[in-house]
Every structure is written in structure tokens, then in C-alpha cells.
Length: 81
Image (cartoon, rainbow, N blue to C red):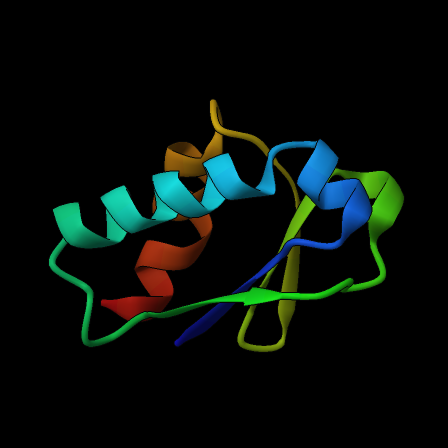
């Protein structure tokens, strides 16, 4: 699976780099470094929705440093295992 985290202006201001760091931690915690390709991406076009991640073809919106782990476990982990 490829996860593209928006680092465009709006998402950058809303904490996209903190989201990337949290995703790195969670991916390592679950030992998914070989199954999940984490990338930064310029604008994904969902600027008003908060930090956006594109998980393969699905957009996941509204991520923050505080909710990234929960969203990963709920929406991404089942698709990788």
C-alpha cells in the first residue's frame, strides 16, 4: 500500500509533518515497513478538510498528530494485513 501525505501549504500549516512522524511510528510498531510505502505529496485537493492522506485510491481527511494512530488502526491496518 502507498500512503501519500499532503504537505501542501494548507496541510503543512495544519500539521502534516507531525502526521508523517506519527505514521512512521505506527508503521514501525506494526512491522509494516515492507508493506506500506509512506510518501509526501504536494496538494491532494482537499485543502479545507485538514491534513489529507491518500491510501492507494482512497482519500482519508482530517488527520492530526492526535488522531493519526486511531485512523491508521481503523482504516489502513485492516487493508494491509
